[in-house]
Length: 220
Image (cartoon, rainbow, N blue to C red; front, top):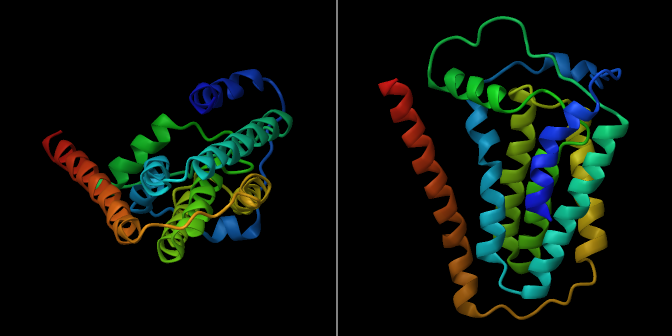
């Protein structure tokens, strides 16, 4: 179901074409400058499904995590259809350098629509809540990572402050409904020691990907 929903994200702007587009901008949004370096944090969003799959060994908890993601995505899509939004790109050049090149690639791949609530914020927080149920220390670290991604959506001008708040609330509600009554199973000691290493491994793979993009930028 999640794989089916992903392409729908690209279809929604076509379905809302011709309708009035909203700008849920706050005064705080205008105070946040564009910081291209945050694009690297922004794109690390795609690590979270792998983190959850590697860390969560309880089949029922993993199933409920995917249900929470599914609930968040469907709710978000309904909001996108009912309240279509747009976030105009900032005027002016981003300047030279790898991070500016990186952010331009993010902007080219993701149109400034489907803003409120931010699924880019909701999905990592659902993963962080799930991992916290398995391993408190790692869950807290992943929660900090999710918070950095939330900040990155503002510094890359991909979302408004209201979108971030909406995404966090959506993650909390979806997790409360889907994960609250899931039984906790004792975690083997070997898994307890392996979980932080698995998360670091995912971060290492992502760092390798970013390094590869830097090489491509230098060669290009």
